[in-house]
Length: 207
Image 1 (cartoon, one colour):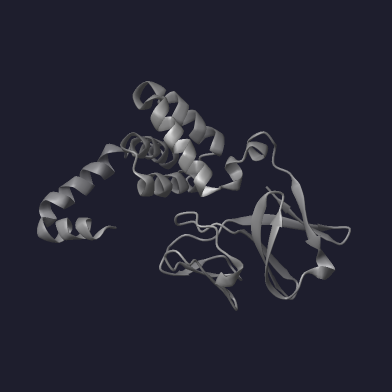
Image 2 (cartoon, helix red, strand yellow):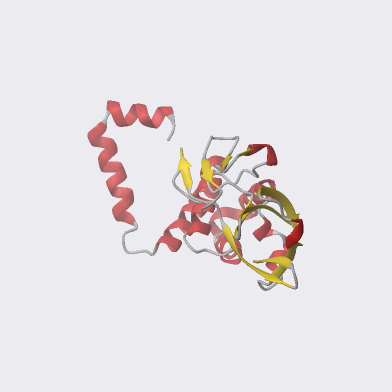
């Protein structure tokens, strides 16, 4: 929340309370995914970069697929026009989300080879596999595989952000427990995790 918005909430609490109540009531008959998709379109219409990135990640979290988000953008063409749709796609490309890559859009989910299990060290390792950056956390026989992007504003978290069993996003300080993926400081959303299996001694992940 911006400092300016905090100021208005304190300076005009009744008016701002009514405004937020209106926003909540306006979409109460829509499912979360639909609300988030509409919010994405409104941010594209206003060309608000921060808002677009925020609501894009929220739409993904609420169950929207990359294909559904692209469809929503194209369906809004009569209102948005090509220039704003291109702006939104440029934002997507800058965010470097693996689910929006051309290969991912044209491929059904499948198992991907990650690493030979005996080569995986205890603790957390950052790897690149199938066009995705991953954090692989191993404690004894327990393994967790996470997407490297922060769920807040999809910052691609670097290896230097690993602090023992914690991962701290350098952009806004969201801190995650690598044993569970849960956000334990600053934020309220977990890392994106992937299913895994071991086949012929090799660790595989599903996406």
